[in-house]
Image 1: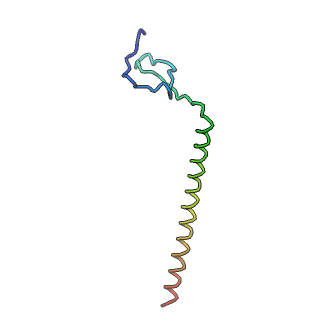
Image 2: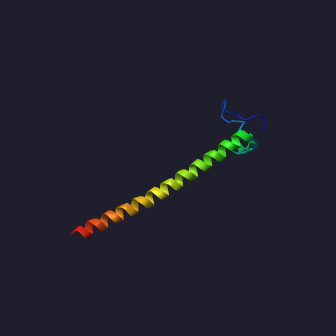
Image 3: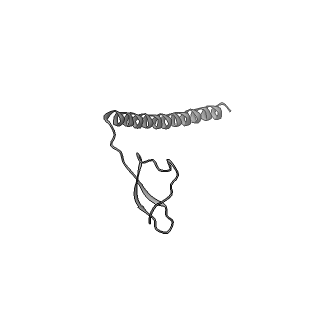
Length: 81
């Protein structure tokens, strides 16, 4: 195979690398590169994960409290009749 036609910027070489060219389809086989993160990027990623976990816990707690409030309100309505 002499060459393979690719569109300009079709592959981001900062994220992917060539593994091989498929002989029948003439398409490149690529794999994702796992870049090394700087300490600042690692810190930011950890902060994002903490925020996501806190948000999930807040939602779970909110739903639980909401269910209790609805149950208490339903009991009061039933007791009034």
